[in-house]
Length: 506
Ligand code: NAP
Image (cartoon, rainbow, N blue to C red; front, side, top):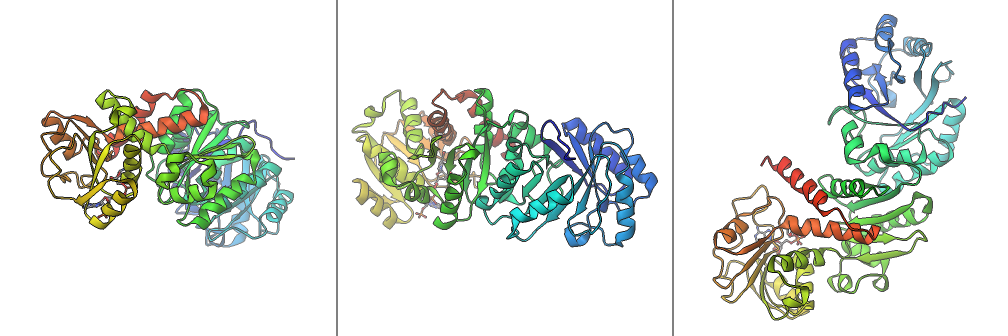
């Protein structure tokens, strides 16, 4: 009989070294909202006695999994099989207890709650994954496979398995986080959630709190739409926090996950192909960040991308229609110039003829210069590597010069697109003085919120625009492209400000 829990359980692995520690940890896990716990007996300093087991399993209405993982399967138990199996058989006599037994054990235990048959691959993805899951299903009540994907494309294979049998299919590591979160959409038996950061039992496991608050676990269902941010690195991206909070505030049935994807067109294209082969994922959009913005444009093709995104050469927003059609946009440039125009109290057309000094010639500068020129501003590009500034200037019809030279006396607007002054180098400033002519200073850096440059500008009486204004604007634009609704801008801004204040200790 396959146990059929009403909804996917959030299972907290208990990894304490003593029986008392295990019991205390269970109480904390339940208090934080776990639906079930997993006793990892192999973490105990001493092999537990039947009395220890009874103490741990006593008084629990909550479902519990008992696991005694041997070293050969990635666990810590290095002793003989016989006492290990005897203890697992004993655990199976308790009500509401599931026992996890590895695939290679040639016995079948009678377990009152249900027998989980498991296989773990910490080095890759088993070739015969589908067949393996079928074998595990036949050998027990709940199949469980955990593997290590090369990228998020391989992590999607977990859902192929869950669609057939609602067991547990988990892709480990940072590239597999989506498999843990989206498992609930496919009615998985359970997913594992660490009690707190660093206390998980496998790489890539979010905490209970992250599942509940960041990933909106309780509202994920079969019809939930899926979004994500694709980039490398991705761990510190604020996009999952900002978009999930926006979906929650606007009551949109959607979840947003990080997608660590190795650099290069190959890994990017493989993920996109894997998504499109699975329309039943209800994947509706992607934010694209470094180093994949150019790959996104190439994959989608210029004909299906916003004109200025093509000119810039970068797509940061992908929309996928229910029919599978792709569309590419760039929300960085409108985010920047709309933040600027709001501070100046003008419409975009009002930028025509204004004099702007852009500091830097990298990706952010390129998007901003293209937009400024599109709306008729006069632009001087100043960069450490002058040749880079000259190339950009030639392409968009600007002037170029070295960073560090005095900014031309007539610049009305100064925009910093270098990383000078960014956390942790918050004492640095890209200019020695701000010209008399300058009325507005915009720093694209968002950490810290007020850079040295902006503090100086404020003291000089200039209007200021922060990188947070730009960052929030690009996320707002993505939300509105995807949902065709009005974004909860205040909520999104608060998420960003709270995160920045928290991470930099302000
Ligand atoms: P990028 O392509 O790597 O370009 C970096 C730029 O900074 C280049 O012009 C580089 O000059 C210059 N630079 C770096 N270190 C320098 C130093 N020590 N001295 C002088 N110049 C230096 O990076 P990006 O993607 O354009 O990002 C640039 C900035 O924009 C970052 O601070 C980022 O946080 C910000 N940004 C903000 C948002 C937002 O939403 N608010 C979005 C994107 C980017 P060289 O050409 O000489 O190397």
